[in-house]
Amino acid sequence: MKRVPSKASPRAVSRVKGALTRAFCLAAVLATVGLLPWLSGTDPALTVLRARSAEQEATAEALGAIRADLGLGSGPLALLGSWGSALLRGDLGTSWVSGTPVLPSVTAGLQVSLTLMGAALVVAVVVACALVVPVLVRGRGSAGAVGAMLAAVPEFLLATLALLVCGVWLGWLPTSGWQGPVHLVLPAVALGVPAGGLLGHLVADTLPGVLDERWAELWRGSGVSRGRVAGAALKRVLPPLVPQFGMVAVGLTGGAVAVETVFAVPGIGRTALGAAKAQDLALLQGAVW
Image 1 (cartoon, rainbow, N blue to C red):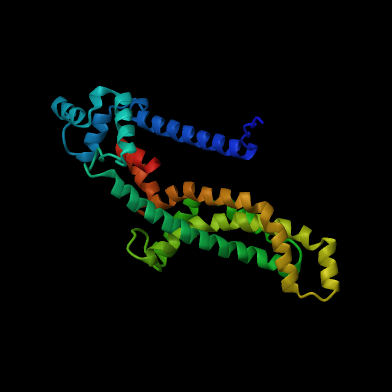
Image 2 (cartoon, rainbow, N blue to C red):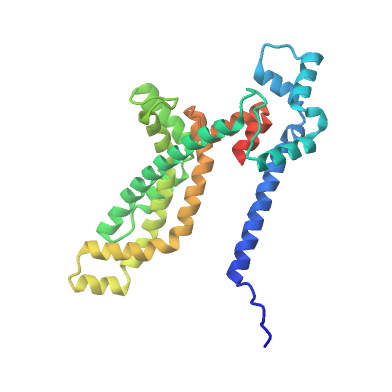
């Protein structure tokens, strides 16, 4: 009896396609980053020279030495191929500006950014709860507008206001650096409040309709406690909103760049931005990776 080869399930095929698409997009982004110094129309050797020493005169000899040191004469494609082959060995290369290995800088910046994003998520949950609890108590929506307003505030604007008011005028908290937990407060608030406003807005706008459903009325008429009704309503509301919560978490990554810059937090976003300004290609590629 002949055995019929089993076909791959649609879900498995979808996963493979998704993985290949993500890998292709990542490779395209890294390739684009590798070409940025040449796409910008500026001389990478001149930019690196200014980043290394602003006082040094940009003579032909100095620029030639930098080109020889970085291998710029071989062209962008050769540099990109060399970086890719080193990446396969776990080597992210050496910074064009400082001459130090890229991997420790990227690892340290990533740890700082993850800590900041974790604290921002805590702030976001607190803000979202503050917006949702009144809706659960009153049974009708009133916090959606407040949540929408908070969600619309740009992170860099909130970071600047927090820095000026709480850091400069009142002197309650430090305005820059990363020496302890106290330095985490203002960046986490600036990053977490808009995210919490969006989460609270989504939940607060959906809850009144759920609380007006027939089952909720029956539960309340049967003497079920308000806490149990609220918990059941949240269980019905939250699962459809999970994809939106994921998008909020991803959005924290983009907002972290502005917040880290305002508060001089040595995170991966600020590291990548500084590398882009200095055209430090190796460090920028490592930060993107």
